[in-house]
Length: 208
Image (cartoon, rainbow, N blue to C red; front, side):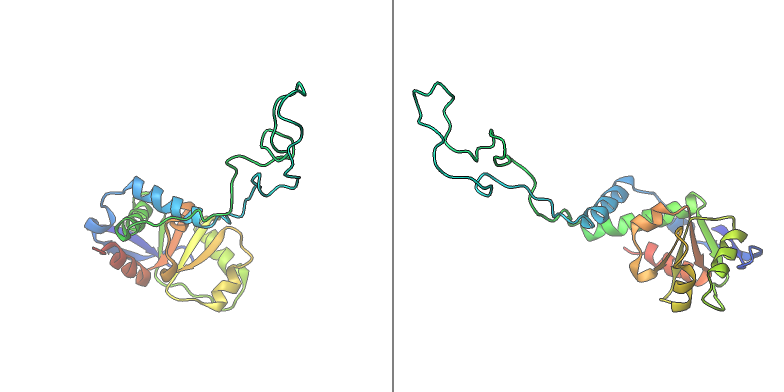
């Protein structure tokens, strides 16, 4: 079994916690991470882009000039895509960019993201995480103790005092376990958890 150092909020060592090596040091699947990340980011796209087809642009339906005898190329409509102010051929129209993934792929991606935390030494484990008052300086002091400016803080449940303390820090995000996702686990340089939450993460890794 491998071990991780557990810290107090002041940055001093509190002890060590044992990790189940078969869970945390298993294989990381880049393809599952890629697909899950692509799905999450694609679902955020508004998909409101729109262009007008020839049936939607303004203009008469009358033939501009007779078919033959004018010396010009034949034309049937001023709304033709070949004409200025005409319709657009194969242009974008409103649609949803999201797509579905099998449940097994989603779970595999989350497990891979969690394993990446330990294998890349991005996980900080605290014995407990408490905020005595909703003050930004308390979170700033915590980050200073660990020399971190960009961090994801995982919480067991929502805390209004912690949310108020973190809301003015652009490099910090709070995330509850029920909102665990691949994008946030990958994009932050450090992820801060408690020993209690570490056990919950091991349950996530144990998904079959």
